[in-house]
Image (cartoon, helix red, strand yellow):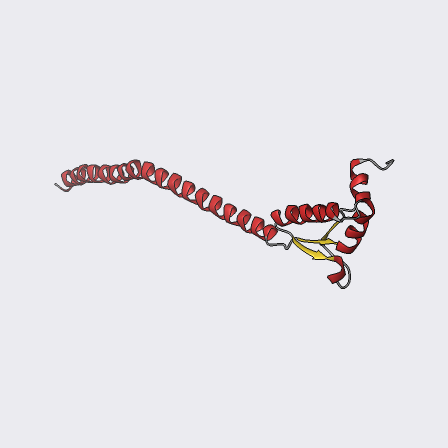
Length: 143
């Protein structure tokens, strides 16, 4: 009778082993698509985070450029003297300086008189609106 029990034990073990393999395989079949979806969602989330950080960095970079002070230097005395040679009344000189100041103020520049600066103008832009400079820019040097 012992011989008969052994085959029965083998028969009872075989379905249990099949069920165990089926359970793991079944779980893997069900979990694998879920894990793939979660991985894709995580990758999309990370990409959005990276894009947000890149936007923040570029925003900081443009902010640093915008906060650089814009300074323009003009020699009011030299400009008035140069225009006085052409128009003794001084109207042309006043208009040239006024238009120049309006233009540079509109662009966000702080305008300083050259006489008020001690030392080099550094990174400041020098404005020259004398008649000679205007003619040179236009190419009317022969007049």
